[in-house]
Image (cartoon, rainbow, N blue to C red; front, side, top):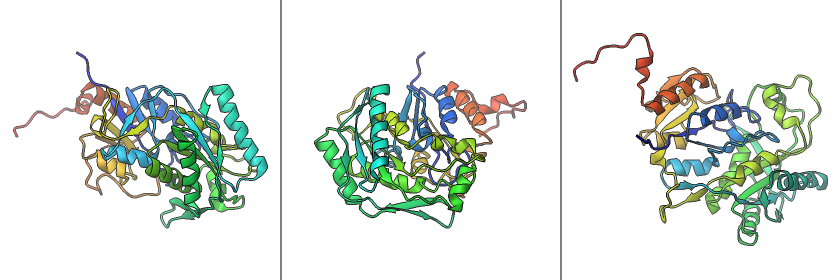
Length: 350
């Protein structure tokens, strides 16, 4: 007897100091493991991006966070592709040498990985990225000239015939900040992540097209006490390679019609894996209403306090991602988790 494909969403919200997934691609091992259990893994750039490091997962959907919220709510679907033509937006504020480094990274992706890019566009005004930190410790940010970003993206879509957009914005250098030092030592919150999300959300919301962001920063001085979780960001001048690799086969967002056989919708998602204190996001809230199994991982601590129980969400709480993978295996197999414990209570009358 054939069964329908088993589909899992893996979420690690950005900018909330997640112990796993709050650093430079350190949730990639989790994604790789879950991809061995699921027929389709749906996750977002914060999980799969590791600066210059990435891992090709043939059954993984690289879905920007705002787009994932729309899919979870049933407003959009996902349609797999063989290859996207990627348009590259560069912030006018990027210095000439740093700009050249990013253009060389784009050419390297074309020559070495065989990715297809359009000609690039420089914004007609500096984007003006500003970083902020909330009282909870979560990071966020703003851009002073969002219209400049949208004009550049629109030009790539209409003139360059881009299927996906990669954005490189100049972020403020803050070499002496305590937040940056803590992050490099594997503590605290990524100071850039919240602002990165704002940039990609804006493009996806406006054009309904895959988008991801790579910050442009000056290289950091060598730190002998660097945490392995932060090390991927220290390898060079750019974080662009993982973004281009992810966008190259990111599924397209679709509306209800016309439907195709491989389209994926919210009611086809079987399970969601999320940090136990970060269940308040729009995607988790929406999918909790569809019958998807919510698996909350206690070990992945964050700065949030949004537990499933506090939000009235029915969830299976597990200690670790190893335990979460076991829960996915039993769920996929149609086996009650209670049957794997030594003490199984007798069935009772209703």
